[in-house]
Image (cartoon, rainbow, N blue to C red; front, top):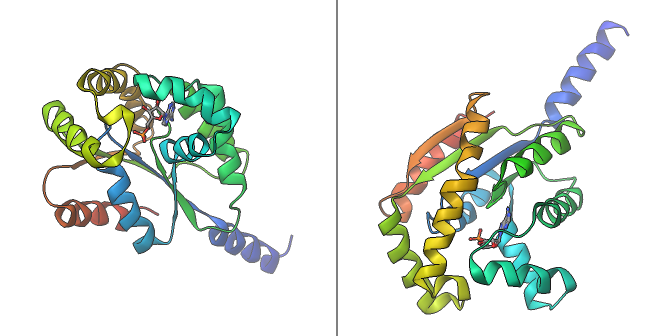
Length: 208
Ligand code: AMP
């Protein structure tokens, strides 16, 4: 390889490097709202596994019917189903600059699957950004959202408490998983939408 090829190879690699951010935090921490604003500002694609499942449920697909049973109780949909669906969505969008993953990964096996999937494509998770909101605030936010969202899982306090329990028992460890490679960061999730967006933007501006 001569010098010119070498420079070209480095340039191509840089050019193709995508930004893959996990927007993390408990249910009701504002991930969906903030993701919508962030994708616009940073030209990334928003992938919410919850939204993908709700789309499948709306279309009454076999995947949707399977997911619905778990979702309505506030349980996690099994990893293999979720991981397969996520990979399909990523594969279907080869041209985008990167992704904001919202609601995924939610377990260590999902995080490991995401890492090896991205590695197989010469990519990696760029950062995990966690919105911090305490439990009682989450419960009141979700019950309020349930009045208008039509989401069964937002309308029952027991189901909400179960989702919070699942988050602390199975999902919060995903933060530690990415801390090992210094990729995890926390942002205060209290305040107005604009205040939180400005905090997140400061973090996103530093992600390369
Ligand atoms: P969300 O919209 O992110 O709050 O997700 C709503 C529900 O969808 C969750 O309570 C789970 O039942 C299911 N779900 C969404 N993402 C995942 C995931 N990564 N793994 C397993 N279940 C998920």
